Length: 312
Ligand code: HSE
Image (cartoon, rainbow, N blue to C red; front, side, top):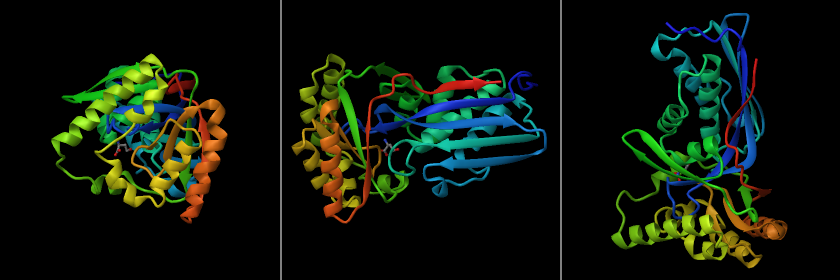
């Protein structure tokens, strides 16, 4: 039977948000962003478990042990007959707008898994932890990007997530226009067709491959063509008032291209850093025309991925 590590009673992990799909790379591409959530797992003196959520959109996130972060932590602690401490407190200091397509649930899962793994002396390897995170999340793109950092290409085969991590060109910035309404991944997946035309599959394979090659070689001008998609955005657009106009406004203001961030409703524009402010303003104004209030963020990619920042 495993016991928890004697020295570690309180572990803190910091996990970056992710924007996924990047247009054509549906469930395949993810980019970590410099926007973070912090998860703390501590062994308490008293028995009983507690989950505390503070920060951005705390009112939209359940503060119960049903929370995915706590469930993930328990899964690790209970593995192989592990002894779960009688009292645990899991705290999330959330910096990521919730249910907006920025990988919040993936960061929570990673936070739970990573802190629990550290607390019981790291029985899970990095690969095992990522595979488990992808299984819990249901698709690998968000968790792979948040865990590893940078632009991550991933493919799942027999429960194993294979990844290649790329560093984005330094001049690439991401502008997020985050509408003030939520859209669950479940709902945004429910509108997708179960079968697609071969021509559409080829369209996406070509763009997705071109996008990765363009980013890897710094040929950013190719992003305009490479970020187009026919597998999910045309169906999801109807769920987001102003989708086309916000995208057009961003491109007119100088963005290379715009993609739905994950399952939405956030839109992500890719651009040179010096144009980010004018693009953010244009996107917000275009949403406003459709009576949608939004906030904007101008972000750089995170290249470090999720980190244990304290273990004591
Ligand atoms: N790739 C997923 C989707 C991300 O688009 O449904 C959602 O979190």
